[in-house]
Length: 550
Image 1 (cartoon, rainbow, N blue to C red):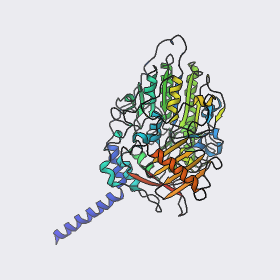
Image 2 (image 1 turned 30 degrees about the vertical axis):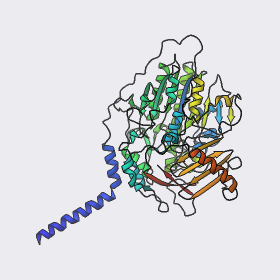
Image 3 (image 1 turned 90 degrees about the vertical axis):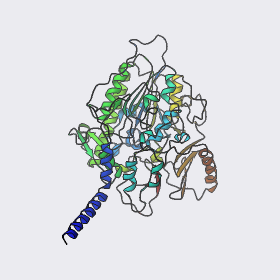
Image 4 (image 1 turned 180 degrees about the vertical axis):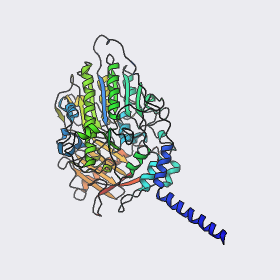
């Protein structure tokens, strides 16, 4: 009898333990991911390679400073007529790039998520041409986000059957070394090349920034980073309990950078401030030689962490989450101003091409409804809210101030534009999708830069041509057709009334799609994104949605 009681106790204990493990399975996955991080060293100073003591005689090619924000919504800057909390967070420094240069009113991201956009930027090619279709993410991340279920009407899914085909280490999901980057192209003309911040294009030998044309790299290889240690008293935080992505990031992200592949170490300031401190130092170190700087902030990507000083300055915003987010935008804008000031202080302002954009639209998973206004959709959708992004160029000695260019342009054009400014050649042995935008702005090139623009993520494909935009999704089995010249905010689907235009654009889409490579790694995650409301809002059966494959 006693033996049976012992056995029963063991069985009950195992059942309870199993139930607890199942209940906390996502927490355990996150803890395991956290445990695999390397040891992070204390902060130590970075010594930037110093250029000559005096500039070379004669004309000098322009410096190129490319500033990339992360998940910045179209409506997050006051230039576009709105701004966070209806203009409560002015962005004068970002706006100044437009006032002193050119606004591309119809600038498009390379993709609706970060890494494929960055791959398109770095190469001037659709990332799907070389298999970089899905954002590199750890399998643990996909398990947490896909396994969480999400909305009961259209639950997220983890594609467990594809795990065997996925790389064990997401750092190997990379831009192939055979691709030519902007940095590699500009080095042929003697440029010193610098990367700061987020990379997310591969983290192993051969794919890292210092292997892809950058002389110096200070930042992090993964797709996100903490801005400060969790619980830092000088920082205000906002967590989105409804969002599994947020849960994973808070639990698994480090607060660390590395220089040219060295061991990871802690920054000595809030991340956006720190990256700017180092950008200013590197501008000073390179003032006497042409340089290319890729300054890839992780702001305003989650986790939402903002300096208390910026948070305190926005006491008029009552919603806590919106106030933290607004404080991050405020901090980002101020730091961009510091970079612009450094160029001016060093006498480089007039002869520097400054490019500013965001990698994609604002994300639904922060739960804020107005960040992409007036556009529908979010990051991970190809509705305008996901891919219509701020896109600004400033080059005082060459470009007119306050100009607005309205033909559609894209991230793929940044490579050719930077190369054109530097006098560097674009690759001739492969298709380059981008063009040099400067001749179009100056009136030396006529017509539209692109006959068609194209996007694909798994089973979701889009083409934009002649002012018409066709979206084709396999899940749901749905086609949307919009006349953007008359309906730029995609309110009126014309797919039923204009079958002729659907057929025409389907043919264009098929022609472009046939040129692309197969994905270099599989999609492990499929998640529903509602077009017209952010995360944390209860959906109804009539709400439009797409499934994002990653």
